[in-house]
Amino acid sequence: MATSPASPKIKKVLVPIVAGTEPVEASVPIDILRRAGADVTVASAGDALLVETMYGVKILADALVADCAAASYDLIVLPGGVPGAANLGGCAALEGIVRRHAQKGGLYAAICAAPPLALAPWGLLDGHKATAHPWFVENFPPEVTAVDADVVVDGNVVTSRGPATSTEFALALVEQLYGKEKVEQIAKPMLVRYEAGYSMKELNQVQWQCSGTPKVLLPLANGSEEMEAITMIDALRRANADVVVASVEDGVEIAARYGTRIVADVTLDAAAAGQTQFDLIIVPGGMPGAETLGGCEELVALLKRQAEANRPYGAIGAATAHVLQPHGLLVGRKATTCTSMTGLLADGSECENRVVVDGNVITSRSPGTAMEFAVAVVEKLLGRDEARRVAEGLLFLA
Image (tube, rainbow, N blue to C red; front, top):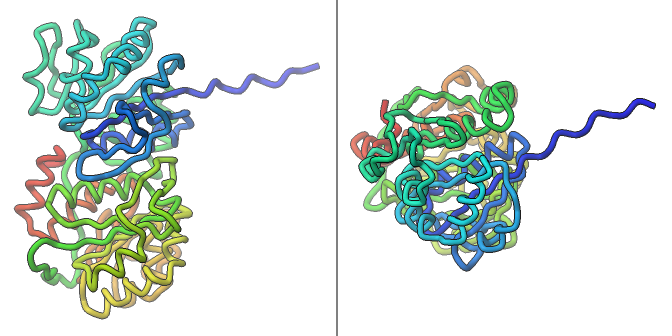
C-alpha cells in the first residue's frame, strides 16, 4: 500500500517585542513570515502581554518571553527601536533563549539597533559580518565586522538596517527557511520593490489644508492589513501628526489579517463623538477588513462629510475598491488599488502607478507600496521638507 508523503514541518519563529520596539520592524517580519506559512509567536519581553511600542502602537503579544524558554524554534527575530533594542538586550530570559538557540546552530536575526544593542553584547555576533542602523553601527565591538548593506546573511545570522529595509529583511528570512521560490510567491503579489525612495502620480494638484497639528483618523477592522496600517501610523506619528486609531469592532482589540493583535486607541463611535472633523482620513486594506470597513455606516458617513468639505482622504489596497469605490468617493477621481481588484474600479487607468493623488484623494496599491504611500501622505499633509525628514528616519531616501 502506497504511503502519502509526510507533510512538511511547520517552521516555528519567535519574535520578541518590548516597550520601545520599532513597530514596522516587528510587524513586517511577523506578517511576511506568516504569509510564508511559519508559526510565529509574538512574545512580550516585559511582564504583560500588552506592549506599547514606539509611536504609541499597541500590540498584544501571544505569550511572555519568560514562558517560551522550553520551546524550540527554527528562527528568532529581534526587532529594533529605541529604547526597544536595549530593552531586549537587557532581558535575561530572552538572552538565555537566543544563546541556547545559537549554540544549537539555530538561525537568528536582528534589525536596526538590535544587532549592536542586543546580539553584540551577548557575544552572538563575534566573528560575524553584520549591519545595523547607521546611528548605531559604532556600537559594534571590534569582534564584529560592520558591513554597509541593507541585509547581511553570514552563516546562521541575518542582520538589517531599519524600517525601510524590513521587507527585504523579512524576505531574506523566508529564503533562509523556505528557499527563493517561496520569496517570489510572496513578493510578487505584494509589489515589493527593493529600491529606497518614493514617487507619486499627481493629478489636479491642490494644496491640502491643515492648520496646526493635523488630526488623522485611521480606522481598523478585524482582517485589516497590519503592514499597511502600522506603517502609516508610524510615519504620521514620526511627523508629529495626531493619529487616532479607531476600531469599528465592538472593542478596541483588532485581529489583523496575519494575526497581529493591534489595540486601537478608541472605538470609531468614541472617535466620531469626540472630534467634529479630521484633517485626513486614511483607510488601510486587507481582507476581510476592507469589506467590514466598507460596510461600516458611521465610517462611510465620516468619509462622505470629508469629501463634501473638500478635506483629504485616502485608501490603500483593497480599501480603495471596497470602501471608496462603492460609496461614490471616487467619482471624477483617478485611483489605484491592488492588482487583483483593478476591475472593481470604475476607472482603472492609473492602476499601474504605486501612489496616485487626485486632488484631495490619495490611493496606493498594496503592502509593498505602504511606505511609499505613507511618506507621500506626509508630503501632501505637511510638505516636502517634513516628508524628507521622516524618510531619512525610516532610511527610505534613495
